Amino acid sequence: MKSNILHKSWKVLFPMSVVGLGIASLLSSCRHKDLDFEEVPRQKVNIRFDWSNAQDASPSSMEVWLFYSPEESPDSTLRFDFNNSYGGSVKIPYGSFSGLALNSDNTDWARFRNTENIEMFEIFTKEASGLPVSGIKTRAFPRAKGAEEETLVEAPGMIYSARNDGMSLRRGETEKTFTFFPEEIVCHYTVDVKDVKNISSIDGTAVDGTLSGMAGSYMHGKKEASDSKVTIPFYLVKDSQGNSLHGEFLTFGESPKTSNPHKLSLYAVLDDGNKYLYTFDVSSQIYDAPDPKHVHIVVSGLPLPDPVIEGSGFTPDVSDWENVEIDLPM
Image (cartoon, rainbow, N blue to C red; front, side):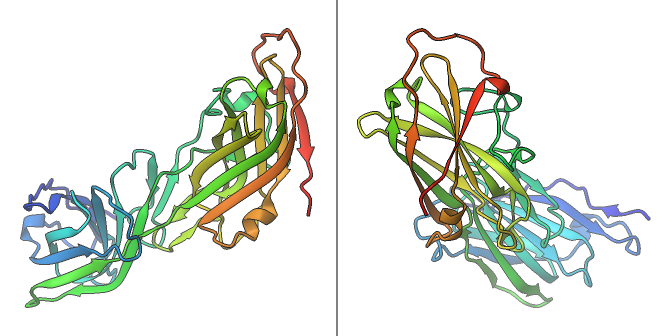
């Protein structure tokens, strides 16, 4: 069965509104004849972004995906790009459709799957090659127990998303406005490690860390984190005067359908070349967080050893790490 693809390239300019009109994929089933997009009747509509659900947001650009009703236009998808955060006017074919809106600025990190299906529209990040501070490659450092098989992926950046269902455009209708209410969909995680013994023995100004059991992607259409689980690397800045470490990063959070264990791993490379992996089970702090969008993880008591005077100077490898699991008080 052959799909008819409308592949004509378009770039429609609208003053202070739409940068371009791109046809991400406008497909019709085999029972329809090939069409030129210029021959498809279209009507001007207004796309508006209402930021009442994310009042501090100020993205410089947005994109909208329209998914037409399968009964009217099977597998048809349109994408519109805006060079602002308030919207503009576009011309679209008649029909019934649902839509997704998301910011398109500062999203070089983002990877997308299944963009032709609103229910399966998924955003994820690429695999991480190693730890951010030490640069140690993935194969060369140990994982927390139970998370050995999880993929190490980069943390996401900021994303605002909205869905609008039940939209339609009929012949004769004019001055129609479709409004999207974007909201922040990523989660802010902070990690504080207090009472670090011998913090001055840490090489450099930061320490590598990872957090296991996190959702590997976000399903835009379903407005929820996916069931997949990954490990996210991040770094913690050293505070020698306060004998503490502090880190912040974004995640897709935890899937609402799972209760994965979460292990916080700290990779301390000391001035003398010795390497220590400290692991904390922080599952309860994530499960019981008052606000799942803003999770604060706190652990205390990192017993770094007294440094050796002369370092070994060797290259870190998996077998060179000393693993220490620390139980947190209930």
